Image (cartoon, rainbow, N blue to C red):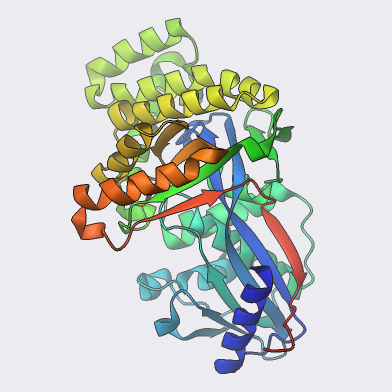
Length: 410
């Protein structure tokens, strides 16, 4: 597959007059979170893996001082072409994928990085939209590309994560946390990435069993989710920020993560119920997801993938019923998956509303799950009968780079 992608990128470059011959290809992964989904902007510990749906970006420095980049996923947009120092304002690009290269260039300059060398590039991605962090993968890939061609070395991985978040929050206008960027940038094959926000540390936890025994599945509903800034994600985040402000004033909590015992939850929930009753369910989900977190880590370490799946399912029910950030198509996928023997857990993914759900399954279950979804989902949602898809994934390294290699036939 990798060779075919390299050939494909080289053909597109030639067709559109871009020079990437002798360049490099950076591959950035998608991600799958085992906990705590929506915990990143609430100060909570995070755990997840990189998964093998990718963005490939083939690039080579140029001498023009311009960024010239084509996305094979949006061919109608043609080549995005702009001079360094002249990135457009986000309002002019709100309906174009080109807001990402413009945004990366703008944020890097704002943060003091000197960019003097442009590049030609072609990219292609197969990450399902909505749920597996396509935008974070793209932002990270572009940041690293700007750094390489300009010979800028940044050893602090969390600084790169912060920059990728800035692209989305400050330029795109999407109020995301850092979960997606962390889980992609630091991902290692066969391992889970554990982020402790209180210590600012990243630890890689090997799976204690055989990773061939399970699969991670993306259940793409075929629905198109707008950016997080246009979804109920923003509403939920605003409500959590308001809830945190109330609890800070009353109890001195720095984040909702501090509501981490039964006694603290009972007191906080009673206080919130009196002032913002609609937010109590969100506090309940976050508290209960935190109580499961240590068990999930221990299960992963010991190779107990069934317990990981059980907790993943419980998180999904909480996201549906308490946090209330799922959607009908997402829950249909979960209902169908839950009916298949060998499915260990399932829930909506990412920012919510639309996009993809996910499932953790035994390795030999994929064919049965695929057949069941293909039979049932079009009946439930005929409008998306030609749009949905099922992808079986494995854990992978989040970021890899290799020379562009084109086979002689191409």
